[in-house]
Image 1 (spheres, rainbow, N blue to C red):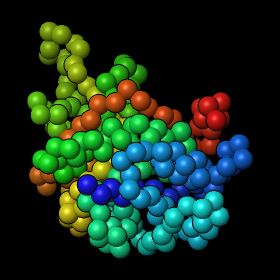
Image 2: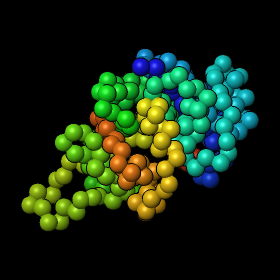
Image 3: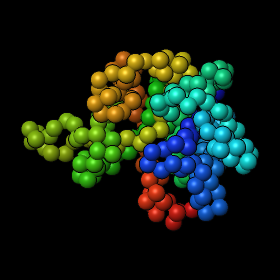
Length: 240
């Protein structure tokens, strides 16, 4: 199995413009993500996919590999699909979040281990610790699983409604937004039309479920903080 790691990176984030290039104790965020991901043992190649010349030049500066991609992509998945079209000899692509400077190589290897099962076409990570606050937080995506460890549904809400249950506890899982796909599957899902479920929850993975693709859930106890807005820097800097 030949694995390509792709780090999608945009300059024009509405909540934090220029985020990939911010300085984190002497290194740009994109450099820290790249160097962290490089430590994964199951990656055969790694590159940054960006639509911005400044990010592209920064990756080349620190010795990384980068590719300039279209500015029209609506998601990291679409950007990964464009990269795959130029690297057709890879079997699996892993989509690595470009705003997690503390990315764990162990976590990436955990996700990629899912493809030891030939039935797996798409995989993502989940964390078993879901607090009452998480259930109320629309930015904490909850997942429910079937008996084969495939996702039934992803939601910003605390589905199912446990009001009618004798036991209020339910085995929710918390989604961690790392994805990996087999190359043929990535090429197909990038061409799917949006669906109502995806638009209602603003979660692209619901499109894949809607069109009949199973998403294998891999449990991890590792979670690293991401940088979404400037205030998130306080969560990350003490660990660098």
